[in-house]
Image 1: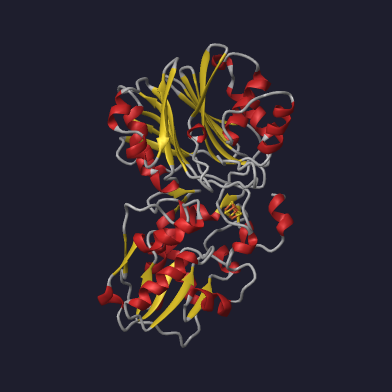
Image 2: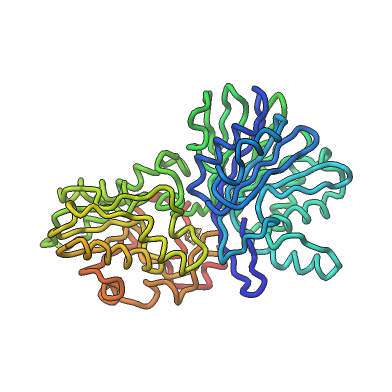
Length: 466
Ligand code: SF4
């Protein structure tokens, strides 16, 4: 889902979704548990919609535990449901934009939760507005729901999996989406034909569940977990589930940042374990160091830098240590909509351990460098604790382009790598040296032609032509 800022027409978002059918009582507590395990995908707002025939929604700004407290949970009953954790940009935190989005059509409830970004939504919205349609939110999820209603023109209980898929494919085929639809006594889930975002299914003793990442199923009695492939979806009813292919998968284009940054290290995204990927990235990052490079300690920028720093340390034999402790009660800095908040938060989020840092030549390993704000604040912090040298390393190549598939990468000019050399970046962030993983090295970790790496590429046009 993205939220569309009407003035700047800027789009960005990375969210988490969870839903399904529960065989053991109400589904609401299961959805809340699932959302808590997906909290890393969005911390601005959360919502749950539950029911059988009729649906009830609870949603609010804030972390899952604040947005859906236990008293709110008690008001939600029903065996079917969907939930959402949200991340958006520039403070567009109106309650109407929080998902799941529920509407009533021909006397029946239908709700939707969405992870991704569909670029055609803006045009479709404008078309609707020209014919007098009113939107209650600035979210593209409402556009998707309205498009479905206009195309199908019948009670939601009569919507067929295939016709919903066809409508999505016909209208939003250049977008990135994983969608959960809650119809009377039914859940339908869809992953777009390029497969930018992940979608997982679990058959458990407790029921049938679908989620952005398999970490969300942890704690359930899982019988089997299946990855929903690009151009596939799943229909879940009271007694059964069926995985269906709705079109031919296009040039599959899985976002490498799901592995590098977004997903939990526990998760298996696009058939690869995230933690193992990060270890490997750290190992191959070291291969590009100059032969005479020395450091006393390899320190990760937590959390996604952890596996990478372990891999780097294993390959280099430079001892690994935790020089920065992360305050887990703060929100993630990249997952923050406003620049000012971002820089302030860094200092509250990381707490340095002076005894590890003082007098040391540090190699600092992070998942990526986007604007450089976080790195610059961290380096100041390390220097104030007496670090002798700080060498910044990024396991992702230089990010030089924006993303239209739902990831909050700023404009090209804001990207620190867009027009600066390694030396200029080092100067700007206050590091002794800076290095990125060479782009060609990514192939050693992300095998085959099924990965999106467009934000590492120069040609801006390419990004609009998947
Ligand atoms: S452009 Fe970059 S961030 Fe966007 S989907 Fe592709 S790899 Fe992911």
